[in-house]
Length: 362
Image (cartoon, rainbow, N blue to C red; front, side, top):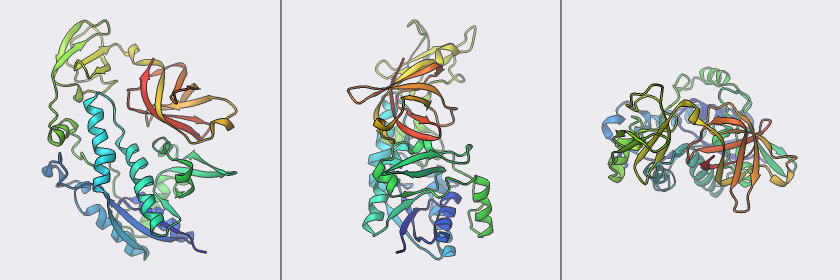
């Protein structure tokens, strides 16, 4: 019996080739493009949308063009309300509480492998599929999430929240491919988006002006405050902590004998804490909202490799499960400081063991 799969087609080259590969493998493929927001979204500046495909119908039209070329059905699904509740509002709350948001991870969890999977199953599909560079491997009665073969494109870090149920109903056909292969297939098939560049911005803030978006969306006005050193001494002032990220060096505006970096943001006092580069090292972190991809009872040990940033090279650590459901991760040696709100993902070999949200560091 032919299996049916709904492919999330963003209009980009990866999802287009995903649909092609699955059709070649014999699946009945339905293309689906999620409508997540538009220029009428509160906080959007329509002027910034003129040349940004995420603000126009270009992406949908590109996806439809590929679907027609492949001879597959295509539909646009309106998830604007769900996207606002599940992604945009948490993004705003994170900035207002001096945390680092992860909108793409929230979108994966709540929309692509949440709402879209629900819709796919309702329509009689067996799976959803996306163009992520990661692999799903069946091992006995469980599914493992494994790094993509192209190390430079591996996206397993942003998929750590997938449950066993979601993994069982998900296909990631690009996981064993390299980006160059994907581009070549798109060119061979004459896809309109074969040379389309990858988006580097948050989709609902195409101009990268996070502070401006917050002001327009929620009326949140950045509050000026003190810049303090790690001993608590006031050494300057800033115009709003929303404009700074942990680890930032440029743009702090403090003259000092050596470079200063943002090491913490205090939402209660609207204060920025800065220190030397050594202060950006941490011995570990505590994570909540944890998802075990592997069964922790099956693990031979809790010695892992950990990433707290998407592009970070994994480093050794030890995982400690705690009775309150949180996880304590102790680094083998001091490593780059993670900001509260960031994702922390742990691996054994190429396999994702689990991940969560950084609650605190030590």
